[in-house]
Length: 439
Ligand code: ASP
Image (tube, rainbow, N blue to C red; front, side):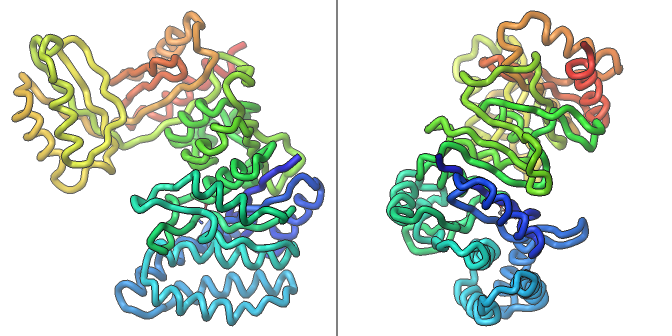
């Protein structure tokens, strides 16, 4: 039995927490490979080491020398080494890291140093070998993970090593430059390692006891999700349920390796299991609710739009030309809406897009609505279940919320509802009540 364990930033925030990590590992001999994040927050106003390193990168890029932010990073690591009573020559390590950062002058390189330093310290503390992520996690020139190369390199590096620590979040590209995943990317490293060693389970240790059925800031103490499928997880995490990086499932899904979300601070809690669809037994029609605010809808109207060959193609070409990704394109016979995340629309871009769409397809009317929130109601239990959408929309109607957009994926796995951002929280509460509180 092999388990790969990834520990998040809070689990590694100080020496005390690292001791918990050690205990967790010692409790189960199957926990052989350990992937670490950079130290996270110890209390709510505490900065994350990775954020300080991005500031350090900025210092280097602007002023070519390192200032305050790095001294905070150094203090964090010094105190961890001191708390653990390790013999690691931390001053030398911090000094060589500072020099390397100044030389590289790259955001990715600087950001990766939190995981690098943590990996070195954790390996010393746990007394197991450290594997350098640059050697084993490979990126392509376009900055995307090269899965096949990474699996092969990892297998070679871990051969004959029954246990090891690997730093999360970064790797190296073909040109020898350090690259990172997007934020929270140590989850992806953990999944890549799990896949490479053919793990039986990928344990993702964090500071919550798994996924909740909806955002606890909106509904106090929502139900815990005991198990969900890779697909449900993808939908929920893409739509803002951010317990796990939304790309972390791909490497493990291909090999049917389950993921278990566990809480470092309550290791006895059961956590949430993420499984192949075939092994999931939905508890009810809806597994979870997630959502995000700040979307813009561009509504196009044109008589006989349905008969105009290439209409959608020409509209979407405008977005593609400006490298704008869209979320949904719900359409009617003579109408079509483009739902776009506001962060895709930089300064003046909305006006440019409107103008170019008007030139490309001559619509009768273009209307823009801002301030839209999207709510995703996700669950395999909806598949072939009669009446789920009736319950959903009745619940929304009961609280007097106007639905601005509806989209149902063809897999019957989710229903996306667009509402005004101001109505978002009460819509979530109403939907939660309907599916999780009623017998
Ligand atoms: N340390 C990185 C971040 O804060 C990556 C990670 O923790 O997974 O985003």
